[in-house]
Each structure stands twice: as C-alpha cells, then as structure tokens.
Amino acid sequence: ALSPNVPDYRYSLGLAYLKSGRAKEAVSELEAVRGMIGLRRQTRVKEPQVLLHIASAYIQLDKLDSAKKRLEMVLDREPALVEAHYSLALIAQREGRQEDALRHFEALLAADPNHPDANLVVADWLRGQGREEDALEKLRHASDGAPGDFSVQMIYGTVAFEIGALVDAEDAFRNAIKLEPEHPGAQFNLATVLLAQKRYSAAICLLEPLATGEPPHDGAAYNLAQAQRASGKPEEALVILRELLGRALDDPQANFSMGLLQEELGDLGAAEESYRREMEVQPQFLSAYLNLAVLLERRNELEEAVELLKLALTLELEEEQSTQIREAIEVLENKSSTSKEESKESVKQGSECESFFPGFLIS
Figure 1: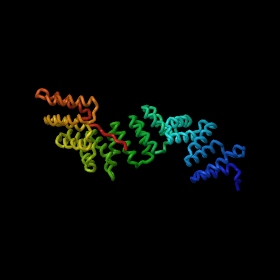
Figure 2: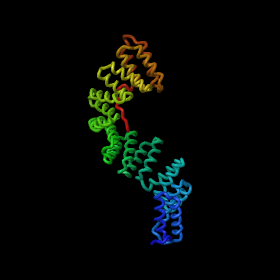
Figure 3: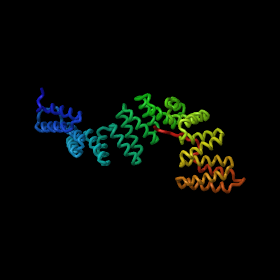
Figure 4: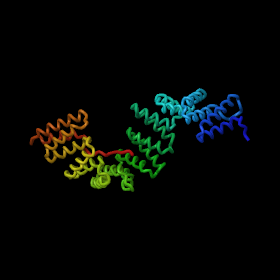
C-alpha cells in the first residue's frame, strides 16, 4: 500500500477529489503535495501542474483571487504554459476585464497558434474592431486546431460568410457536413454559400430535399425559389413560394419575392396584392412601397402612386432616399403627356431594391 506521505499518492487522491466535485478536499491534498515538493520528496509530479489543479479547485469554490494567485505562480515558473493563460483569460472574462482576457488569450496563441477557443474569442474581438481579415485568419487557425469540432466549423463558416469570404465559408461548411452528414443547418448553410456564388444547380441539389422534407425547411424553400428563378425557371419559383406562403402567410421575404415574380410574369394585380401584404407584415420595408409605386404608375394610377410615396416618406429613411422620393413625387404630381417616361424613370431611381435579389439566410 502507498503511504499518505508519498507525493504521488496524495496527488492522485487530490485529482480524484477534484473530478468528483469535492474541491475543498482537493485543495487540501494538492497543497500538501506542494509542501512535499518543497521538501524535495521524491516525486514525478511537477509543481506547475499541481498549482494548475489547485487553481481549478479554487475556481470550483468560486475563490477567484486564490485561483489567480496560483496561476500567476505557474507563469512565474513557466511563462508560456497554455493552460495557465487560458484559465486566467476565463477568469478575466468572468470578472469583466476584457483587455486582460485578450492579453492572456494572445499569450496563449503565441504558444499554441491553433487553440480553438482562444482564436474564436480573439476573432470576435477583432471583428468588433473592424479588422475582418485578421479575424478571418484567427478563425482559420481555430478550424485547423479543431478539425473534428462541428460547432467550430459552423462558427468559422458563418462568420466567413458574413465577412464575404465565400471560399472559406464553403470549406468550413463542407467540413461540418463531413462531421455530421445529415445536419440540415450545415446543408442549408452550404447551399446558401453556393447561391451567393451563383452556383445555382449545386445549391438546388442541396435545397430541394430540405424544402420538401418533413417538416419542410422554410428558409430552404425560400432560397430554392431564388435559385430556380435565377436559373430561368420563374414559374417553378412561384410554385415554391405559394407553398411556402401556405405554411407561413406572414413571411415577409416570401411575400415580397412573390410580388417580384408575379410582376415579372405580367400578373400585376397579384403583384399588387403581394406588395400590399408585404407592407402589412413589414411596414418599414421601403422596397415594397417603391415597387408598388412603380407598378401603380405603369397602370397610370398616378394619384395613388403619389400617396404611397408620401406614406413612404414617414418611414425611417436615409437622406438620399428621402430626396429621391420627394423628387419622384414632384415629377408625378406635374406629370403631363410629354413627361411620362421621365417620371417613370424618376420613381425607379428611388427603388434600388426593385430588381429581384436573392435572400440569404444563415440558420
């Protein structure tokens, strides 16, 4: 039997206490081991490792000052020890000391450039500073450090997509699908990237099973409609949107896209209904007002078009948008037989979102 005075025995007992949540007993045993190491008792245990475990026990006990003291002692002995910097960074985050947390994460990354958690935190901070490319580089390292971590790949892909790094986003989501082949979110996100790259056939192959599955994925159905329309199949896109609105009548994107398709196919009455429904569902969506105003002008319903544009002026607008709308109103109010084309063009200039634009959704 091992003697209680043997450091390795006390160390193993301390770890057992720590793993079972008995932090007080863990501190007692591990501090005893430190004392034995100080007395140069024979042991295979190194003091920095003992200090790390003592700090972990103090964190469990919510005694953060004691934990920090032990961790700083670790760094005095081994300045580049990853685990100590990581624990100090987490404590700093918990206490709201973000600059200290970043300092420890950066020191950690100097020793372990591919540490996933540290890279994710630093990438988030860099994005907040507007340093998108630097953030993307940290995310690449996070992905390299955790190639088998599904959540890391999904975060990497989502942020890369938001930044506009579509090649990185595609790689990340393909890696995620390798890890969880049946995950609908990963499939949908990859299809979204392909759609942004105008690779419509590949996007459709991923979106169709999601859009027609049980339950159907509404975001996939919406994006499938965009892909079909972009592939020159507006009628098929219209069918998909009708089915989607049958399930979710108040879907604002679907209503607006339906109006665009109906107008493109020449069904102006149906398009008007879709635009008006969009305005009810999403009253601040300027493009619905502008597109409907253009449609009304095409039908020579000028007074109603003017009233609609005046209503649009009550929305939260940028100064340039307000100026364009006021100019369109003035032209329409003074419209004569010789100025029809001019007024028509004026309204369209205030409707930059009039053309069909695919909606990209990351779930």
